[in-house]
Length: 301
Image (cartoon, rainbow, N blue to C red; front, side, top):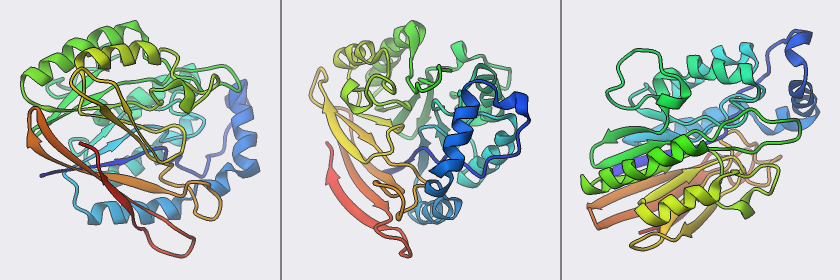
């Protein structure tokens, strides 16, 4: 059995001191939003408790689906990288970026540098990678293939949309077909939800229809995402049956402040090609002052 843990949207705080010029444009709105309430929702003590519970389950690998930082300030990345190191070594943790990790054009450059080891596919060496050649990446762990996509793009104020772009979408189909031919259980990771109705026009994946067209043609065994800070399970149409799609709430969401308190997903993957068995267990907080516990479980495939 392969145990895959999935967490998302840790939103590492507190925010560092920032120079006035760093808060120009969209960042000043995010700064105000953080100080007006988001800092009380995203609590690092909650995140630490959740992460300790996750590690106690002894997963074989961890998938982290983005929004490690908040405003993509240069001063955020040292703490964010330190957090990633506590989650696990780069070969144990697979990361895809979220919209907050690429909050501005400059922030997108910082994230590639700071998060590089956790966002590399197998056999890519140590040479610098730009975003076009980095994604989609593939990591093989046992009979599981993790396929990482980046939907993180800088956006205008009041927008949190994502986009994969034609290059990633064109690459994804052949990758998934090859992995199926090789007999792997294919797990696709991205930050934004894959359905329009799950995020709305200001926060959706702009090219979700094109992504869904690829998945309908090639299939996948599991799709993971974050972004909407909600626990969600649904299914997409695939060529040989439904494809489970699973979202998890923010990993730092305080139980007393968030509609969906912090939790994570734990998948058990057994079986073989054409007969994969995937079970889902959700662990997290029920109420403030209580440790994480099992919330629910179900069979996905």
